[in-house]
Structures are given as C-alpha cells and as structure tokens.
Image 1 (cartoon, helix red, strand yellow):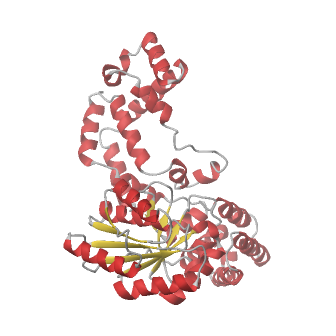
Image 2: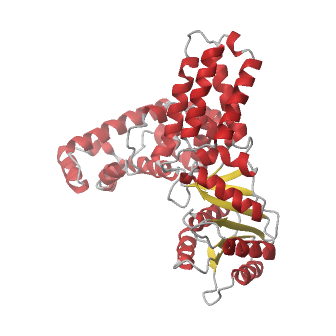
Image 3: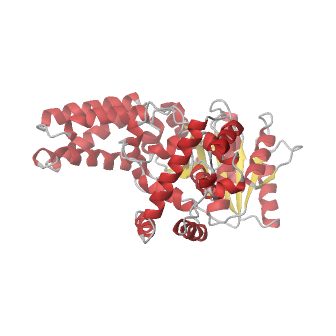
Length: 442
C-alpha cells in the first residue's frame, strides 16, 4: 500500500532523521523532495505545494532548527499535516433511518457492486444490522447476477426485479420490501458508466431524490489517481454525496486519490477496500494511513483485527492445555485459521512498524500456510494430539501424503516445539499482561 510514495518520502526525510546539522537550506531541499514525491504519487500540484508550504511554516514556527531532535519533530509535522490533508478524524456512517438507506454511486469498474456486498457484510457482522442489497443496475450484463452471488457469499438477501428497467421504481420497491421483512439497512447498488455523462447523472440524481438516503457514498478506484479526484468532483457537484470509498488499495496504488480527494471535494473518505475477499473492508483512519505512508506501520489496526478474532472462552481452554502441556497440532491449526481471517499477509506485515520497508521486495504469498496445513492434515488424530509419537516412518508417510519432504516435516516439528515452549513461558500472567497491554492500545 503506497510503497513507492513511502520510499520516496523516507528518502526525502532521511537527512533530517540523522544527527547531521539541520539548516533552513536543507529543510527547504527536503521539502522540495517531499513535494516531488507527492507529485509522483499523482497528487494535485496546488495541493502538494500548499502542503509543503504549511509544513515549512510550521517547522520554522516551532524552531525545528534549534531542537535536540529536529528530524523527529519534522517527521511529526509532516505526519500531522498528512493526517489533516486526508480528513483528520475517522468519519462514521449515518444509520439513523428505519430502515437506514445507503446509496452507492460511482463509475463502472470501480468495484461498486463488490463493495456494496462488503459494506453489507461489515454492517451485518460488526454492527449487528440486518441489511438488504437492492440491485438497481439495469444496464450492465449480469450485474444483477453478480449482486446475488455477492449476497449469497455473505448471507445477505438481495432484492431485484429483472423485468423492470426503472431504477427509481426498483429502489423504492426495495425499501418497501425491507420495511415489510425486518431489514434495518438498505444498500442500493446503482449503475455505473465508463465515463461521467449527463444521462448517468440525471438517473442517479432521480434515484437520490426519490429515496432520500441517509448516506450517499461515492466509490472510486484508488489506482486511477488524480482522475479519481476529478471524477469525484464531477459527481459531488451534482449529487452532494456524504463520503468517499476507496477501493483496490491493495493494488499498485500511487496514493494521489487518498491524499488529495478530501481537499478537492471537501468530503471525507469513510471506507477503504483492501483486498478481494468479502471481509477486506476497513474504516478509513487518516492518522493511521499517515503512519503507514511514513513507514511507521499501523499497530492499532493490527491489534483491532486480532481482537476481532479473539475468543475469550477459546483462549481460556488454550491456556489450560498449554499449562498441562497438551497443546497439539489441532490447536496450532486453529491459531493459523484465526491469523488468516485477519487479512492478507502482506497487509498485516505492512501494519508492523519497519516491516513494510524491510519486506518491500519480498513476495508474501497468502498461501504461505498451505504446506503447513497440508502436513497437519496428513497426520492421524493421535499424531496431532501427541506430536511426540511422530517417529521416522510416520514422518515419511506424512511427507508423502502432504506432498512435502521429511525435512519440511522436521522443520515444522521444530518450530512447533519452539512455539510450545514460548507459550508455556508466557503462562503465569505473561499472556494476560500482553492482552491487557494490547487492549490499552486501542
């Protein structure tokens, strides 16, 4: 996420992070490189120039040149200004209606239909809502089918009317269906076009006027950079939407849209899409994103994801097993499943301070656990429960059954033994203290 921008900003600020002499001249040179990095990321020239001017003004106003740690203070100023540029505080979503109506808008190919499903899943699983998806894209081939597939994946009902070509009528009927069937949130997926055109704008305006949604979201492909910002402005001039959704942030994203869209349309980024899976959706936190752009990671989001998968009852059972030295491969497999639910490995590594920079050229495969799972699944129930029973002939059989080598099986056993010892050492309050510390970081 924003690897290229992060690398260039790191280089620009490197001279100020060291212990060399800091002068007004090299501050100006550094900010010139910062502006160049922003322009390379497809940030609007005026926004990039205003940004560096503000940073310089703040830096000189706070006497950066005379502080004991000028580099660190300069990075903090850049971080604070980036956070402000992207919106400051995280914005919530208005769910006050009964039902709450959310209108999705955007160009074709922006990931609007998929994100409608992601948002429905988010509201269902994390906000305890009962959403209904309404299919109002009557033009794109198989658009209705796509929404039904998405709805089936997340266990959310989809309302559609295949014989009707009037999006306004479908949207209104969908809301009535929601009221009659106990749905407290309605997400209306509208048609997109390949470009902004008058017909599209009239149609989305008519739908908006007819259903009066509590929330209107504009979905934009983050990989389109400054074009995304220009499109958002065109939509906002006609629709006056409430917030922006940035999709495909896991792709080759330069960062221009995320950094400059708030300044252009004066509307907050509310959500981001971070992958292809239906749970790859996050609330947008400007300060956390600024941390990631500056290579500081995002520990708070990492802890939040871990806590979403944290089951206190399961943890208690696990602690008892560890205390009695009964931790087996079934338990290990369960831990792997929880990690996988937290998101893509590359995204998780990017949240650890410094890890993103160290691993920028390393291809982190989301199937990294596959061979481990294959080895464990090739074990008998007894072998999983009591790993000490694994002798040479059993290891050979497991290697053959999992398509791995005996050496890989031995390596897994060694890692498992080391992890078991570490977990044993954490007993006696260590694990609880760590969890309390994690909760305090939220």
